[in-house]
Image 1 (cartoon, rainbow, N blue to C red):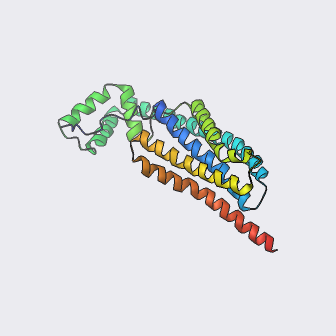
Image 2 (image 1 turned 90 degrees about the vertical axis):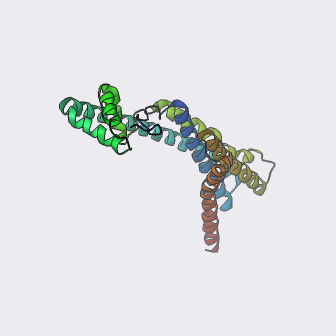
Image 3 (image 1 turned 30 degrees about the vertical axis):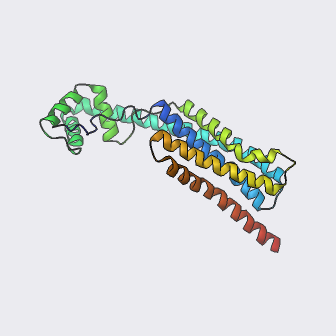
Length: 242
């Protein structure tokens, strides 16, 4: 019999726009913040002028944001090409060897714990719908999500999140009446708050422990900036000793 808890059909809606946008936005926001704060930490750790942090920060923000958006676009297009190629192959297999392809469907769901007579019934139902048949094979046999996000939309969301959130670590450096140390402290507080907020929001949306997700994101994002600061300080120390 077919268990009520068994996931019968492929995840045809796994690529919903909202989830894809969330993933792209979170990834872009975290990377944008890491990029600019790493520059800030590196500049301050190296004893350079706060103005250098502002110039390099915005330059890296726009360049890396564009690069990441293009990469996301190309990755999304590549994934869609994989789906189209797999769909073409499976259609050919179904046309030439339908019984063999039914056997694969049977094996897939037998491994999920579906027994007779439900198993045969399920195989017969799926094989009556060519599109569902192909999607099932692509998702379960090839391990490829059938529905992929819109490549242009993914790139735009990534770029906007990268630049918008990545600007935050640079904001204190716009106030020229502050000294470099104060600017850096404020930037640290704002940046770590952003890391935690992104993780907390992500946890809320995906139904995970929000505080745990926030702390995890804070630790991972802050780690990159700490490394940048430490390396810059060490380089300054040894360079100054020369």
